[in-house]
Length: 129
Image (cartoon, rainbow, N blue to C red; front, side, top):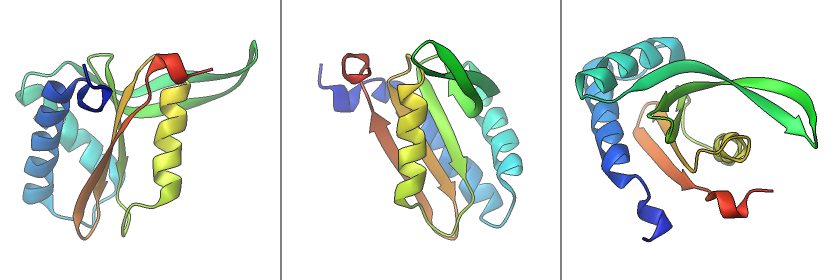
């Protein structure tokens, strides 16, 4: 299986949910509004999801921090939400770092900015150190 299409059945549903929320609310709200709306939409579309999931970050064997994933779907996909003018490289790096810190291999970066935009990232566990 081509890793670029890993969990594409689920990501396609997530992207549908994203556009449903974006088309209904538009841009200009805080990320929390979009997060709550995405949770409603994802569950409506039959996906098992949790928001603000705590993830520990390790340096060697020491815990060096925590972060909270905006939404995790089916323990397979991390969704990072933004309400920024546009996506930038720092947003993508943040998502890749979240993937590195977990066993989850697929991430979606969803921006509720003036223009709807999203990025899909795949980082297979074989490339994580």
